[in-house]
Image (spheres, rainbow, N blue to C red):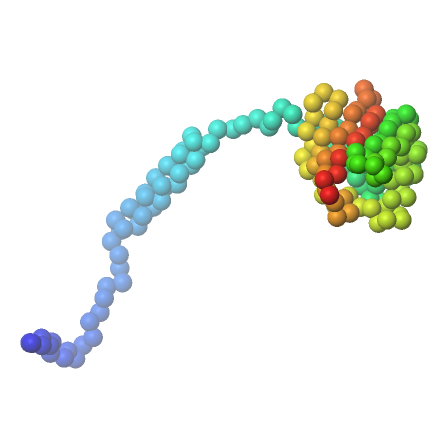
Length: 167
């Protein structure tokens, strides 16, 4: 095997620190072309879509958010304002766990009592879906979950409410 060696030099080899002006020009040009192409392709392949038609109206979601806040605060006076005077609240469950309460003040008192005595708390609500006067919303409360269905009157107040628990 042959070893090739270079003679030692007294002066170190200096690498030029200047770059060609073409390097900077081409780098900027490629950056601009790449960003432009990326924006064009990104916009061309992703069409804007309208929200689904069955999402609840803003007024309904605002009302449901207010109801959740009032229930979690245990504020019977505020809870009663969300229900029609002859409204019904029904829990759909096998006997003896299902029950029905009629009247906005009785509903408010029941929900307030549950919140105060059993630490009832609505912890999570899903997206409200609305078809006409009917609204459905997945809900998690006090370690259980299910779907709550509301029937709204023409004035926007709850006429009937069914709580369908899965746990």
